Image 1: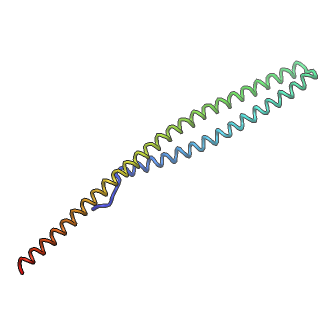
Image 2: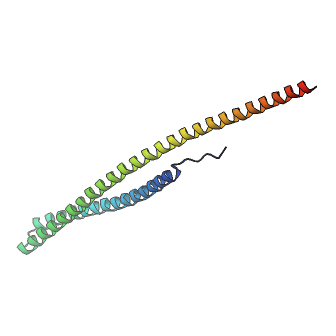
Image 3: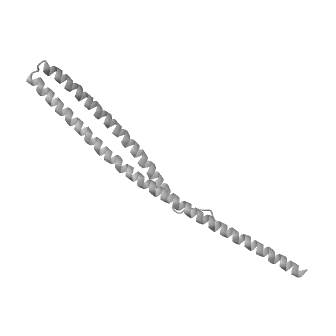
Length: 153
């Protein structure tokens, strides 16, 4: 009997390759997310330090120009923080989508593995059936030969 060959093996390999690519993409996106979160943390710390500096200087009295400078600077920091937060939200959505795709791919691979196992078990049953037929044929041929031999004696 011919060797077992799963007809969807190529498709399964494609799905496994797709899974590996999604995992790599996920790792890359998580790295970028981590960098953005660090950038956000740094911006917030910088803003807090500048606010403390502003409060300290304003208690000693500051000129309207310096006040305007701080105001514009804080607005710029606020805008930068908002942009980074927006990038983080966008990236989190991308990561969630990749995770959903990865879950779906894993389900498909699992389904293919189950199907492969089922087909392999069917193949083994066919092999056993064929072997049983060969053995029965051998036994009946041997009995027939013995009976024929006994008849000639």
